Length: 346
Image (cartoon, rainbow, N blue to C red; front, side):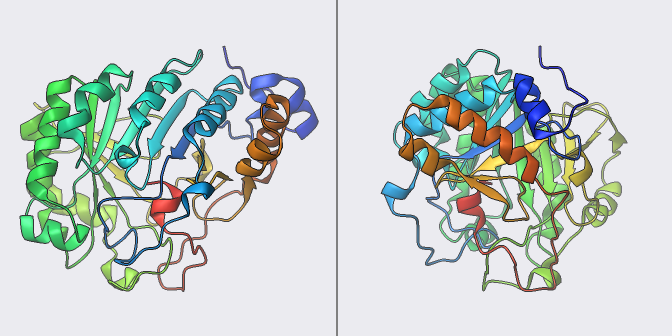
């Protein structure tokens, strides 16, 4: 069992094995998000540019390297892993990778985030691989608006993918919606109604200023979680709950339904004090904070010292000591984070 230590020094943490994943602010890191690819079949306006350039394939971690990173983190105390992208399901071999990661001793849960475009073909296989929960991005129920936001997406295909995921029997399915003022903010009640009808959950996400985008002014398009709750109050009763899935969302239940409504609010309700997460980019950078550039090059360790698990573990343990206290997102400033969300991992 993973037990925290009160010794927060690097030496003390390293000596106590799994409790090395405690940062200098006393936060225990138990949740790892891995971007398996920066490629995607959509070009969502808040995520990337329409002519986005992707990393050369030789610079992206191999599936074996991703598995090695996952195994190291689990051995050091991570209990939840999320595979993201880009769009993770466009990467060949990813379902087999899921099965190998899901089988790691000590891992409590493997989950994925997807845009839903590949689920009609892959949902059953993903569930059989050991994935218990799945998040599916859905920013609009209007085909034209959905196409406008995703630039390439087919709403009918994604809705069929959601139905395929329901049929596959995942323990929980959650929709993720990024809400932009003047773009899809009027759809908030409809999106919740859709989730209620399907018996699944939904979370609303405030846009995060990662990478330069030309589609809209992020400050003008910002729509806060508080505004969304106000919009929903005319249509639904939201009952606060302390339930959590181990991530940053704050949840509310809708009485007489199976649906929980979550709010991920990096701007209006900063959650950095409780951060339990780190991320690995498609290129193998271990990001200690979504909104900062503190990082460790895991790819350099993996390729410079192949098979050296001790060196990999040491790097991960030491990296916990450069995890910053929090992000510094500012919607009105030029982005200080130049990497786009597809490389970072959604």
